[in-house]
Length: 294
Image (cartoon, rainbow, N blue to C red; front, side, top):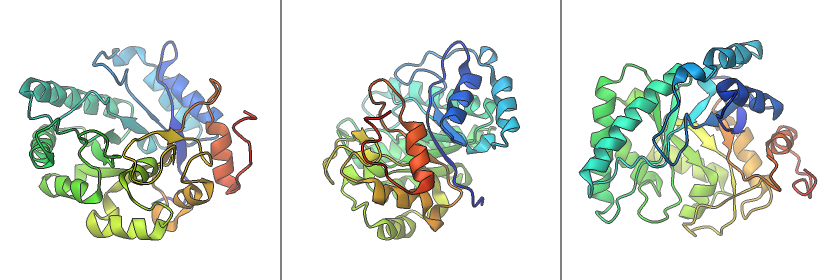
């Protein structure tokens, strides 16, 4: 495991530069990783890979000594393999997720972050069984080696994965353990009811219930909400209820060394905040009013 701080942000993958443009954005932020969707998250339309300038992007990564396996892809949120109410939607989600894993591999990435799913009224137990069935079906025939990282959720609506126990139950039922992981989101666990300020205690509980060996990526975001609000509204570092002093501990915690850490904080005045946020994290020093001075 690398001792390097692997830090980046959510970037777009858009025409005309596609992947090489995403890498350029990442480098402009002073980052050495990034997270992206391979297409619009709200629909299943996907552009062909051969126009996405993947080779150019990989060459730029190589030029800057960045391991493409540190890059993170996020599955579109229209996927819901927890749906037992509409079998057709489950089947479509399964096919789409399988296709996404193939696309992840083409970019050279290794980890695909997935919202576990929503039970849409059927209950957590039924949805969990369905999620396990779906992931097992995909992984039995997968040739890409892509790791599916189940994201910890805030608990809004009928989301599954609102606590460590629900994530652990999913992992327990998945056969190919080497291809399953977890994405921990600080905003989400705050909104789900965890005391994120007790960093050591949170990590100890995660390790006891899930196992730190499964932790593949961390989304580090401030929250607009109080603990337990179940709302999932991200804020910029130091502007939310969690605060910079706590969040910077997650970036630099020795137990989390070598795990990619991704910012999903909101733009401010139509400007990305990531260069400034990453700079402050590296220096471990908060600058008051930084957002207003972007």
